[in-house]
Length: 247
Image (cartoon, rainbow, N blue to C red; front, side, top):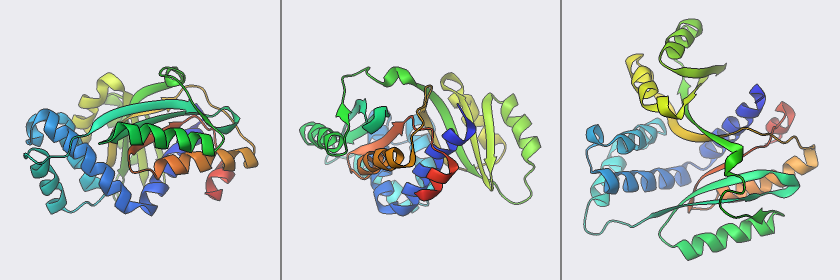
């Protein structure tokens, strides 16, 4: 995969998050809720909750909000969420994989289907595009002044990183799915504080679009990301730097 294609996904998602901070908090609280209900309220003994709390802190969610979400998740009046995935094609053959967390499955599938249809796409069956993505661990880390990129890269590769990329003060570390836990420990050992750490679906087959087709496809991506029931949206657009800047 070309370097800029990965940055296209990362930059767009980061930009969308910065612009929709309130929605990001809502999505993070859902993840904390599911993690706490599944594995208990103690982050030290619940890896999924520990990761959710770390990501919430990385997005500057207030500590009180995090603690309140954990307490509510383990109480009698806790919200009940179901995790769902949907797959389909956007305009011009773009593969789209959607991860949802919802308290109303009928509403969610109806909304997702309508968004695909309205933006010139089509919802597919399970497995229709999943094979076009590979699950990897991805850590987004803001570097502090004085950190040596070469030394960090060597340390991270020694800890299991497959790829380390830099753009300005942002470092993206990618690792294999099975190395995610070890990579978390290595990042902590190095005193790094990820803005976000996640298991992400990285496209193995990319599509290039002209500017008009790119704009059309991004309308679908943006509409999906704006839906409250949708946690993450993955696609395989190989965007150019110019197309990315147009966002």
